[in-house]
Amino acid sequence: MIEKEIGKRVQEYRKKKKLTQEELAEILEISTNHLSALERGMYNIKLDLLVQIINALDCSADDIFCDVINNGYKARASRLSDKIEALSPEEQAKIFDVVETMVKNAK
Image 1 (cartoon, rainbow, N blue to C red):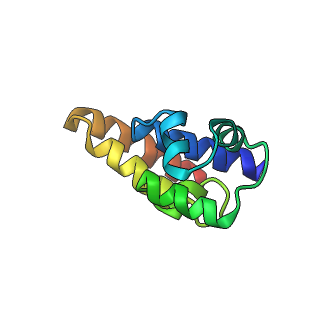
Image 2: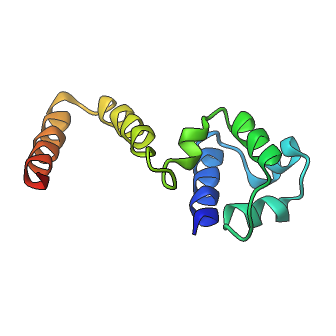
């Protein structure tokens, strides 16, 4: 399970950086098949390779681990905040209304 979540995040950030699997694999000096298997969560990523991936994708460990660590909500909240900031004031107001209602009902 953890491998799939991490792989999904690696793929997401690779695509955000507009890199193909071939391009990232070349940067990392691994095969495209190896990278593909990592993105699909087929096996654990070695720590040294994970550090190389994070550096190559110019993201943080929090970005990659946000779905699998207990405090991952902080990274997710930051990403959502960035997405909301890009919206119009009207769209932001709608989202804040929905979120505030959900938070109130969650208590």
